[in-house]
Structure formats: C-alpha cells, structure tokens
Length: 484
Ligand code: NAD
Image (cartoon, rainbow, N blue to C red; front, side, top):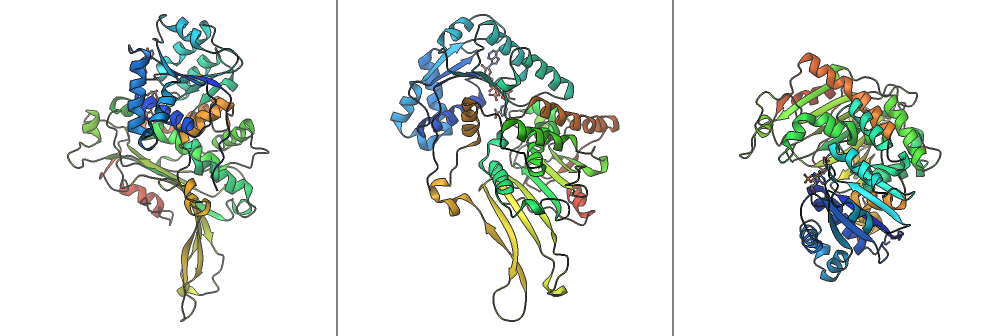
C-alpha cells in the first residue's frame, strides 16, 4: 500500500531566518522531501530571507549543503537537488531595516498562496509582520508560520498575539508545534474517533491513569542562554506535552475541522486543575562523559532552572474526574523516547485466581522512535499446566501493517508545511489555546519562584530524579520504562 501524494497548488514560501539552524536542519530538508515526492507544480518558489550577505548562488550552495547533511539519502540524487535548487533564491533583509524589502515584495507572484515562515527569534515577529504589511505583501492568500517559543508567559503570549493580530487574521496565523505533525499523533485521533472499540472505554471508569513521556538524551548544548531562562516547563511542558494531553483527553469534535478540533482542545486546557506543589518533581542533570552538569553547561552554579519535570495533572470534567495524568519530560535521560501510555484498569474480578496475577490493558502510542501504536492484551500462556496469563502486544506499527514503503512516513515539518500551503489549520495552535496553556503554567512557575524551589539533581543517562518514581509509587503506580 503506497501512500498517496496529493498535489498542492503553486505557492511562494519565504523563509525568514533562511540561513539559520532550524531552516537548515528542518525546513529546507522537509521542503526538499516534498519536492522529491512530486507534490509540487513546476513553478513553486522558495525564497530565503535573512540578515547575512548572500547572492542566489551562495545561498543555493548553503541549501545544497543542508540537504546533504540533513536529507542525505534523497540528496544523493543530483538531478533532484538541482531541480530543487532551481526554485530557490535569496534576498538579504533585516527585519528592523528598510533595505531588501521592496526587492522581496517584487519577487512574489500575484494571486497565489504566499507563506512567510518566521524562523527567527520571537523578538522579531512584530517587526517582520509590520514589514510584510507595509510592503503590500498581505493578500487573502497570505499565511505566516511562527515557531515556538510563543511567549515566555501569559502576558508576553497575549502581547505577541495582539501584535500579530494587528497585521493578520487569526486564520492566517499558523503557530507550529511539530509534535502535532507526527504521523502517530494524527493516528491517535484516527484510532480514537475512527473505531468503536476504544471510545466507550476512554474515560475514568475504565482508564486508571495516563502517562505521557517525552525523554531526550541530548543536553542543552547550543541553547544555554535560552534554555536557562525557559526550563523544561516552558520549553516542553507548556506546548508539546500539553498538546498531546489535549489530543488524548479531548471530547470527540463534531467534525475534523480546524476550529472544531481546537475548540475541544481548548476545553481540556481550561478544565485542568491547578497542579499541587507536591505533585511536581523538578530535576537538573549531572555530569557525564566529560560533559558538564546542567549548571556547568549554563555557566551558573546557582541556576534553579529545571532540565526535567514530572507532574500529576487532573482534568475536572465528567470524562476524566478521578483519572490522573502523569506527564514527564527531561534532558540527558537514558533514551530518546516519546510515548503516551493509556493504562486501563484491571478487570473487576479475576476468575483465574490470585496466582494468575494482575493484568491490565495498556495502549501505547509511540511518537519516537519507531512510531506506532501497541495494545497490550492478556492471553493464556501457551502450553499445558493450567491457566497462566501473560501480556502480549497487539502491534499496529506502520511497517508491519501497511508495508515497508510506509516505514518512513513524512516528517512532521513536511506535513505541517504542506498543511500551511493547503490552508489547513487543524494541526496548528490557535491563539486562545496558547494563552490558556500559559494561564495554567504561570502560577506553577510563580509558586517555585515564591518558594525558592531548587530542582533535584539526577544522573545523566538515568530515568530522572528518584522523586519522580516516588510521585507514582505514592499512588501505587509506576512509570512504564523509558527505553523503547
Ligand atoms: P539561528 O540563530 O540559527 O538563526 C536565526 C536566523 O535569523 C538567521 O538566518 C539570521 O540571519 C536571521 N536573523 C537574525 N536577526 C535577523 C534580523 N534582524 N532580520 C532578519 N533576519 C535575522 O536560530 P534557529 O535555531 O534557526 O531558530 C529560529 C527560531 O526558531 C527561534 O525562534 C527558535 O527559538 C525557533 N526554534 C528553533 C528550533 C531549532 O531546532 N533550531 C526548534 C524550535 C524552534
């Protein structure tokens, strides 16, 4: 079964910050893969726009290097690389100066989708938005894509929303969270709302608790300044984990349309209780293999910023009253693994007696690595000698079920950028969602600051601070392993 490629209309895409790390690692390789997949018409235009001095050919050389480094398999095919580069050009602009803007406006094609990707720090969002409007580049078919971090707290997110709203309608603003572009995340919605099997059980009567883990092996190298001001709560919990929580907990939208889905997600965030301080564990990683510990990395021996956070959240509504949601994320952990585990309750009575042990179904939605969905079910252990029960996985991994050609689904950025071109905002955060997430986050952070809370140290290469295990143990539960 080969996945279908649905062609998109011609478009112009301007990448502000087109020479930066995100453009090189993610945006340009994603565009290149879609080009190779044959999704575009001939005359698509990709325009890099940034502060550094380049002409078209120097920028194309930079893009070619990025493709070789970050899309090496496809970039082996020289005609594809040449075909892609033929669509790429460069304009030098500075968000805060006038030079270059008229030239950029002159390069855009009339009457087609024009997307502006803001791959620059959020400080420049307002200036870019102003320049786009001032140079007459806003049409009905103009869209902007903005990257995280979307604000530092509720007030700054409100300010940013207000700034962008001064130039664009909400329907033109695409706030990207690449977790939502992952194949499995959308599959989560397909599994929930496309099957009869799960939804009747998707509530506190049958679900004991839900775990969401986003574990990373990397530290914070290269992002020290930003990270020490943000920490895991702002950098990961407020956006990525919150979005996953919304999709797992939301009510079925009436239809799969952007506002219907986002309305339901917003209701989840608004129904979140304030998290109790004793339901939060913060940690900072220790040294490893010659690498400094967290405080050494940021050069601040007294830093109280967390590189790990685990917390227990509650959603106060009919569906989820009484079902805890345990969320954790951290750097320098034992494995890179993002997974949601829906832990169903034990059967109410075991007809097999105490020796059969306790068994509960677990639905695991793996975002990375090995994207896929597994349902753990209880069966009889094969062989004679009585009724012994074991748990086996029913595996819905893409490769096995759908064939090897689906083993490598489009990367999140590929899907999301094509959604921008199509004008589909379903997988992008709306302004009110982002603000609601900050409204939940701010008091938690304010509480730490008021109490002078200091994160607990944890070993690099571990599963995080021991207190995170205790958070579960106190409730008679345990985390599912981080290792995939
Ligand atoms: P970067 O520092 O590598 O690149 C910044 C880019 O912005 C460069 O192209 C630079 O020329 C351009 N720029 C800087 N000042 C400018 C100005 N005044 N006018 C015009 N262009 C200017 O940064 P990055 O890592 O590519 O990140 C870009 C944005 O994306 C940031 O907001 C970052 O937080 C966000 N982000 C990055 C990543 C990532 O993996 N790198 C992931 C998520 C979000």
